[in-house]
Image (cartoon, rainbow, N blue to C red):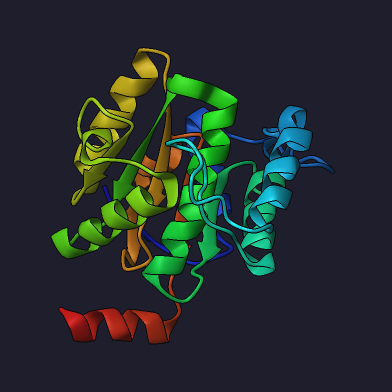
Length: 212
C-alpha cells in the first residue's frame, strides 16, 4: 500500500477516508468523544504525572513525571483526536518514549489485560531505545516484550498490521506507537482505532539520518 507522509495535523483527515472509519461531517466530531466516558480518570492520571515521580510504583504504572507540554500533547490526543493521529515529536526519542509510557499506563487502567502495545521503528537500535525506555518508565522486564507479552516491537509495518488484526479478532485492543524517525505510515495502519505517530521536525529527521 502507498505510504502516507507523517505530519502533525492532516493525518486524521486521511483516517476518515477509510471505509471502516468513515465519519460524517457534523458540527461536533464524534471521533473526539471516544474517551469522553473515561475523561475524569484520564485527567486524574495526567495530573498525577505532573507530580514527583514514584520510582517504586508497581510494574506497568508510570514511574516518572511529565512536563506540562507532555500533558497538553496527551490531552489533545485523547480528547481532540479521539486517540488516533499524529502529534509533534517532543524533540528526541527519549522524551517521546516517556510520553508513550504514560499513555501505556493510562490505557492499562482503562483496558487492563485486554490491550497490547505495538511499536514501529525501522531500525533495531531505535527499537532497543524504546525497549530500554519503557522498561525504565514502567518498571518492566525483558519478559514483558515479545509476541505473547504486553509490548511488541516491529521493524516493518506489514508485520505490525497482521498482529493488530489478530489482536482485534480475539477482542483485544492494539495500541500502535510509531517512532518519529518513520517519515511515512502504511495506510492499513490508519484503520485501527488507537494509534499515535510522533511527527519529527526537519532538524530531528536530519539528526537521525546523521546517525545511520
